[in-house]
Structures are given as C-alpha cells and as structure tokens.
Amino acid sequence: MIVDVHTHHVPKGWPGLGWADAPRLRVDSEREAAILLGDREFRRIADDCWNPARRLEAMDADGVDVQVVSPTPVFFSYERPAAQAAEVAKIFNDLALEICADERLVPFCQVPLQDPDLACAELDRCLAAGHAGVEIGNHVGDRDLDDAGVVQFLQHCAAVGAPVFVHPWDMPGGPRLERWMAQWLVGMPAETHLSVLAMILGGVFDRVPESLRICFAHGGGSFAFWLGRFENAWHRRSDLVGVSELPPSHYVERFSVDSVVFDERALRLLVDTMGEDRVMLGSDYPYPLGESPVGSLVRGAGFLSDTARAKLLGGNAVRFIGR
Image (cartoon, rainbow, N blue to C red; front, side, top):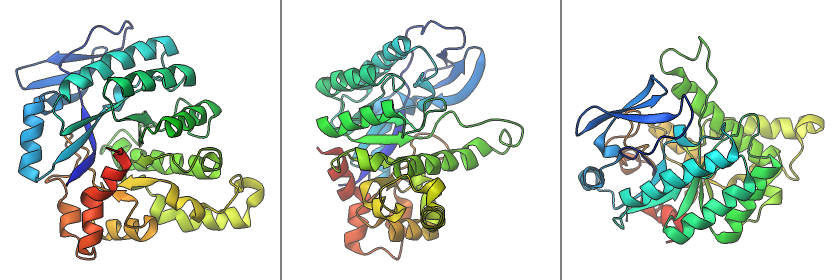
C-alpha cells in the first residue's frame, strides 16, 4: 500500500465568496485555469486539481494506491470574519467530496480556525459526511498553534479521532522574499519550523492527549536540522524558552512529518531525528514544486531497510489516517 499524505485540490469553480479580493477561478480552457485573488493572478493550475480521472491516472503512473487530498491553503479565509470563513469552508468541503468520490482519494476538510467552536462544528459535520481528517494552516494571523483557541480545536480533534495535517500559508512578504520564489523556498520551511516550536515550547503537547495524530508538511521545515539548537536553548535559557514541561527532544514522538525534502541526505537526517515510524510519503501533488515521480526519494534511498521503506511509503500513513 503506497499512500501519499500531501496532495491538494482546487474545485472547478465555486459560488462568489462575497468580498472584493476573494479567491475565484478563471477557467481558460477545458484543462487550464487560474486562481485569482480579486483581479490578481495567484497561481495557474491544470485540471489535475479538480479532475479525479486525471488524478487517478497520475497515481497509477507513479504506483500510488491512495492520496490524502487536502484544500489549497489560499482558501482558508482565516483573515475573514469567522462566520464568513465557516461558509467558505462548507462550500469547499462539500466540493471536495465530489472530487474524492473514488475510495482511493481520501478527503481532508478545512475549518474556520479563527473560531474554535465553529471549527469543531465544521469538523464534526465533515467527518459525518465522509471526510477523514482536517488540514489547518500553521497560524491564524499572529496567533500560532499554541493559541488557546487552536489548542481547544486540537483537543477536539484528539477526542473525535481526526488526524490533522498542518500546512504553512500566508508567508511574510517584502522585496527579499518576493524573488526566486523565496516565500516558498525559505518562508514555507521557516513557517513550519516555527509552528513545531509553538507546539513544543508553547506547551501544546502538554495540554493535548497523546492520541492526537498530527503531521507537519514539507518534512517539518528545518526542525530536524535545528532540534539540537533549541534543545540547548531550553536547558541554558529556561527563563525564556522553558515553557514546555520537558526538553524538546521528549516530544519528537508526538508528531509526524512528510517526506517532501527532495534529497537523500535530508531524508536520512529526518528519519534519524524523527524515527522511521514518524515520516510519511508526501508529494505536494499536483503543484510544480512537488515530488515527481511521487515516492522516488523514498524508493531510492539506500540507507532505508525494506521494513523502514514500507513504513514510509504507506504503513505509517495507514495508521495516521486511521482507515
């Protein structure tokens, strides 16, 4: 069983969302479209975002049995009033079920994370409708994952057994980050690293049950490389860093990461740091910075045993999804 835990969808159109710069889709042809933010082109996409036949064809070509299909983060709407974000979530979550009608496509929903009560209600509605879990952004404005409202939502996820996939979004801008795709090359890994820190140093893992299944995209950012740095800081500057009950290394077994790191040396560090039970195949399909062919890094990694390779390619994901 080969399971890709990190893929995205975009529906082929949706009702107007009701504000001036709201995301909308400009369909340019049967197989091409563009996501617009107001009148500004955000990203060009192809029909593999919305066409399940194209998606399944690509999966077959790469030997992938199952995809976890999550929203594209630009639609989270965390910056909008909570009731509006709840309506947006409902629209996209219902459309996701249409895209993921085939049993090989496992939908994860989105929620209005800025309001924990509305977020819990939408998660419950989606689980009842057929979603298997939830994708959340790594922050809500200046509120990180240790925010009380976000923690309330994560506690609810643990209570109802919903796996959580954390994806970076809304990266900082400015001249230094708006060239060379630096928001994606630097901003996304940094955002993910910061959110893992918030979960650990903010004491979230001390407040949520161990039953919470949570995975961070893009290999957890730079977490694996810098674990020693904030482990050292926790011990030496506990007056500033020591919010968690235990040192950072204690919490490594509390979360998972995907394998989207593109380099065998990075994957080795990731597996050495997280353990072979905490890394899952991810591709970022169908976007151009994703891995293609899907799974090529894990399949070709010479340091992995056959047992470890099977875990990374699918075994760990089956346990994470819970299906």
